[in-house]
Length: 499
Image 1 (cartoon, rainbow, N blue to C red):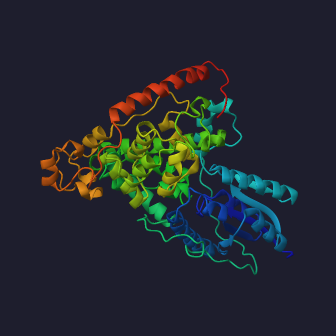
Image 2: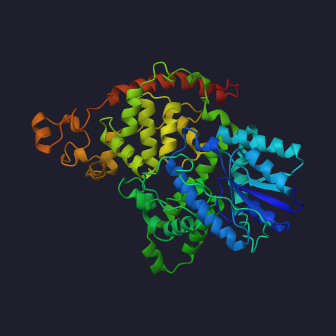
């Protein structure tokens, strides 16, 4: 064992050097800093993981290694179980302390972090986990009213200073950042947005200074949403951008607006302030949903309200595989649902409203259990954030204690936000020649029109696989019968059995 004392900074979903508390604290010690990323097979092989995720992460790691090297110690990468990797490093160096961010993710990561805590305790190595966002660990559910003020206080505090230099660890091999072949992952076929801390900053500033000027107006317009939206969600998910930085930059722009000359205010437009405020609200909702997972990690696998157990088919018996496959591949016969799923499969991203619509359709109209659709969506979203994912799926499925259920009629949604059917035509080429009259419900075409427009229903494009009105009415009846007494019991303070 080397007599060299080191502080380990364990990187997970916080791949940056700015506003990074663990890195700041480790550098402050004055001892050599060992920044560590562990490629964990249990996470790489999880059913929620997609090769596109590794493409994004790997690009982040390459830039992180470069940025840390400029400070004096490049990123160290090891592959294996976290406890085993840390044990080997502890056998090689005198580890004085391990620093990391608190993580609220999935059950695999929860168990992994518990195992590391137990190991560190047996080794008498201090393991300090610091908050990285608005999620408050250790806050009891009974004190949930205090959460917003605690979160607000965190957002007001100045960001952690990036160290001017890191004292290097003598003789340590940095290790290789494996590629897809080495991890036995398929090559990524998805069109991804650029990754890394510098790209996160460009994306955020581009949105705040000009792209987001019409966010409040265009975020729901299907073709305009990709450009009008912030697109920082993957950077928040993998920590190349801290949520505090995002919040403070929004507030900085709002403050600047007050002092702008009238002409510049007019150039910015009336919508600009509303767009920034909406974006800040979305950041708050993000933390609020993640806090729900912090309070109840079992939301990943169990209904928040146990009365919904067994309501929808789930498991090997009675699972409607054909319906799920049609939904996943964009072959349901509902053009906006299908265009959205194909766009998602291609790009790894959907706007806020379309995400809600495709999940609501799967849960309420196809009557698919949220646990059955969760893996495909997790793999599809580049910005997959486990602590958000399962809470939102349950909310849109109607199985949480929030008071309402959101319903989305795919035809009405398309007419309202894509009145010419351009988004549908772009992502459903089989409908490219169909007129505006039928683009939202092509099954209404006569045989003559199908031949005239070059799209035969049942051959080129499927007929609707369910009746929207009938399935919606049935879902509302079944959900309300269970929700009403359970929500009433919660409001009365009665204890509900957990899922």
